[in-house]
Image 1 (tube, rainbow, N blue to C red):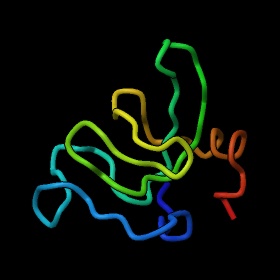
Image 2: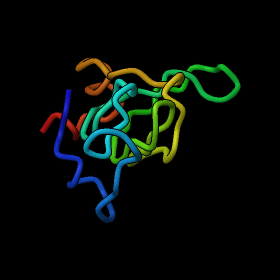
Image 3: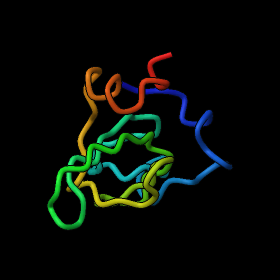
Length: 90
């Protein structure tokens, strides 16, 4: 799912390097709703965030948990969004 990331940003962010400022090898784009399924210790955490900025091929910024490595993230399912951050579905 993708939303208008500007609704969740404090100010306008600039993406990292690459064509049009977006790193082409990062699978995520601004507005993607992602889930951080594990924390730094490997424990399940299920935090839902909106991608605000794509730094480079390995890192991005979200509205809820700041900068994060893409290895801990994946696109959230509608069920996960409904369970953990329902307001994004409105």
